[in-house]
Image 1 (spheres, rainbow, N blue to C red):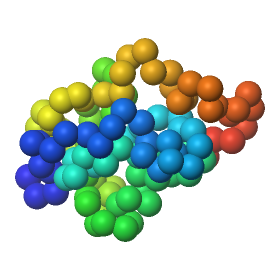
Image 2: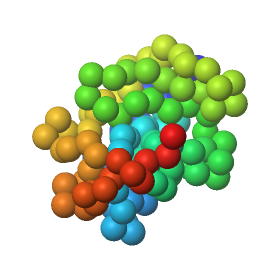
Image 3: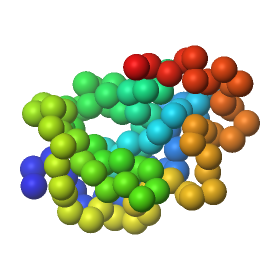
Length: 113
């Protein structure tokens, strides 16, 4: 499928930009083309959508344990897709929201609708 490379591993276990700037995320998403891990649109910084806008990579997959759905930005549609290179989610012991120690006490008030 165009825009999905099942051989590319994820870029890490958390949102790369949030980790770099000391931020936090609600849930994680994985670019199905290059493996970039970013934070979801409910997160304060919305790095996954920013990655799509910068690169044009059309598909993301949830990077949450137990979730395997794909989303296509240009079509605004959910998809079933192939199994991507491991690992297929953040570590189960990593909290959501995360990362541990960076989430403010009022995090629910800071989420995007």
